Image (cartoon, rainbow, N blue to C red):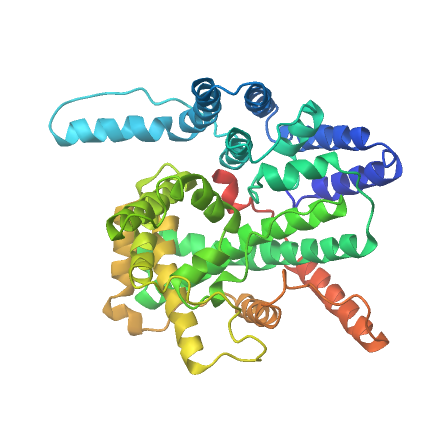
Length: 480
C-alpha cells in the first residue's frame, strides 16, 4: 500500500477513527489494532512477506527473553549470534544471493575458467533492509543491557511492523520506539495538526517534485549517449532533487502519520542540500541509517580511536557497508567509496565537525563563502548520485565523461518550465524553514492575518498536488 495511493487515503482515516474513538480506553487494544493494521498494510504488497517478518520478529522476541534470563557471557553471545545470523541471513539471501552468484561467475570467467551458477528468481521483500536493522537494534541493546526486554509480544510485534515507518524508515531504535508502545497515549490536537502539515509537505515533495523529475531523469539516464553534457548534468541535478524529495517525502509522511497516533519518530532528514561540507551532509541525510552504522558498527570497530589508520579503515568500512546496504550492485559500492573519499580529508584535518549549527543562522541569506560551500558540496553529491542511479559502473563513468565533453557548452534540453519553477519554490520554502523540523512547521497561536496566510498556503499546496499528481510512482527506497 503506497502512501500516495487512494487505498492509503481510505485506510488511514479508518485506523485513526478506530484508534482514538473505539480503542482509546485500552492500551493493549490500541497496540493490537496497530499490529493488525500494520500487517494489513504490509501484506497489501504480498501476503507471503508477512510470514518472513513474523518469523524474524519472533526470533528476536525470544532472543530478548533469553538474554533477560541468562548471565553467562558465552550463552549471551550465542543468543545474540542467533539474532544476527537470522536477520542478516534473511537479508543476505533475499537481497544479495544473485549478486554474489553472478560475481563468482564473472570472476571465474575473467580468469578463463568456465563456471556456471544458478540464478534464483527471488522476490525482494519490501522494507526488509529497514525492519531487519530495527529488530537488530533491539537484540543488540538488550545484549548490551541498555534496554529491558519486553514480554508483551503484541507490543513487540507492533514495534517491528509499525506501518508508518515499516517500509522505508526512519530506522527506529528499540530504545526510542518500543517504550512508546508501553505508555498510555493521549490525543494531542497540536501534535496531530503538525503531523498533518508534515504529511502534506511529504506528499508535495513526493508527488510534485520527485514524480515530476522522474520522466526527464529516466529518459536521459536510459539514453545518456544521445544527450549533450549540459543535459546530462541537468538530469543528474534533477535526480538529486528526485531522490531527496522521494525519500525525505516518505520520511515526512511516516513521521507525520506516527504523530497522528501519538508516537514520536526520529528526524531522518535535516535539509541536507544546504550543507557546507560532506561531513555536515551526512549528519543531515538519512540520519537514522547514518547513526545506526555509527553506533552499531563504527564505534564497535574502534571508532576514531587508535590513530589515523584505524580512522581511515573504519570510515571506508562504514561507507562501503552503507553503499552495499542500498543494493546488490557494484554501483552502490562505488557510491559508498566515493563518499568515503569526500569525507576523508575533513576527518584527517579534524574539520568533520566544523559545521554543527544551522547555516546562516538567524539570517535571511548565506554569505558568499557559505553559498560557495553549499554549491560545491551539492555538486560533489550530484557526481556521487550518478553512480547511485546508473545501471552499471561503466555506464556511470561514461555518463560523467559525457558531462565533461565539449557538448557541455551547448544548451541543455529543458524539462517543463513548470517543473523548474516548482523546484525553485520548493528550495525557497525549505531555505526559509531550514531551522525547523520540517518545512511546514508553523506557529499555532497566530493573528487572524497569519492564519489566513497559512490556510492559503495549505490550499495552494493541495491544489498543486492535485494538479500535478497524475502519476503514482513507487517510492525509490522501496527497492532497498
